[in-house]
Each structure stands twice: as C-alpha cells, then as structure tokens.
Image (cartoon, rainbow, N blue to C red; front, top):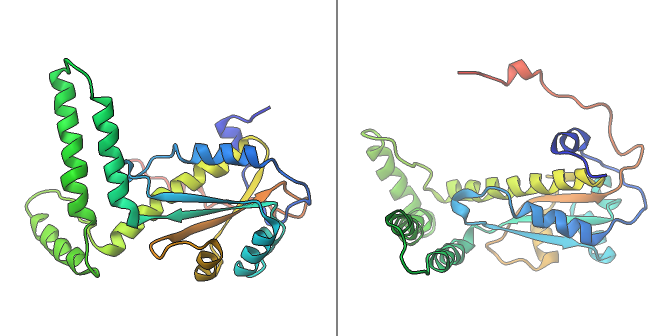
Length: 242
C-alpha cells in the first residue's frame, strides 16, 4: 500500500547500501514523472532527468562517484541535470502553450489581460533577465538593478551565477519530488554530491551547457544501508515565527 506524503517523508532516508534486488524501471519512471510536477522558477522547467538502468553505465558512473557504496550498490541511478542554457526554448514553449490555451473566441477581458501579461513576461522580461555575454551583461544589469532598488523593490538576481543558482534550485525541488515519490512506494534513494561531474557529463555525453545538480542512487535498502538514527538540529533553532 502506498504511503501518505507524511509517511513517505518520515520513511525517506539517505540509503548508502542497497540489496542486490531489482526494482521496476517503470515505477522509477513514474516517480520521475512526478518530479516534473515540482514548482519551478517562471515555469521554465530548466531540468533534465537521466534514468540509468544499464549496468555497465552504472559501473562507470559509480567510479565517477568515487566508488561510494550508494552508487556502487545502486540498482538504478538518476542524474538530475540543470539546463539554464535552454531558457529560450522553454520560454517559447510557454508562449506556445499560452497561445493554445487562449485560442478561442469570445475571451473575457480578464483572459485577454492574463494572456497579454504572460506573453509579455516570456517575450520581454525573461530575455532581459537571462540574456548574458561572458557574464558582462549580467554585472551591468546587476549594478543597474541595485541602483534602481534604492528607490523601489526590484529583482536583483541577474548575474550569470545567480541564474545558475535559480536553475539548480528548481532542479533540486524536482529531485525532492522524485525521492518522496520513491519512498511512497517503498523504494530507497540517496542524493550524492560527491562526484567528478566532468566525467559524469562525458559518460552521459551531455552538452556543455548542462550542469549536474545531483546523482541519486536507487534501490531497496539493506539493513546496513542506513548509517545510524536520524539526526536533525532542534526545530526551535531553525523555526522563526514573525
């Protein structure tokens, strides 16, 4: 029986050793479909998911992950990739979607206004934020917006490094959706930071603009796969009600 959201969150642990027991790739794929429903900045969905089921490729990737057990014993791997470089394509996809949604007669004034605002957002504002050249334009925009921000609230994250962070944050949200979905069906995961990302990109033949957000080991937990009880900083140290 599938777990509730709260049950899945409690069940999820970073499992570092998996049983030599296969898991269903179709179920993992469904969990990845759930990942794509995660919230994402400006609905640009600047992410890709590589679902690795081939044992030889898993072996190569495990080596690139320094042969840590969470990779070496995984039955399958999922590579979450941030694709900031696809912003033009994704913005165009949003505009095309808007045109289809509002392609009907007798639109209300509210619908017309919404279509105009959203279309302007993707055709004007997104290019203003994302367009850059060697990081130079980003810094020019950054300085300009810092000055403008003295007089009114304004978006300030315009540098190349800022937009990379935005893409990775969205990809990380999707990764969490995936891991909770896996936990709900009794499958285990482990998000790994430790890897030679350049080698991982070469193994997967990723484009230059692709960036590895995280590598996730997948399988069924072994008894020794969880390294001790869960530790969390006391809630009252991290919770602030204003």
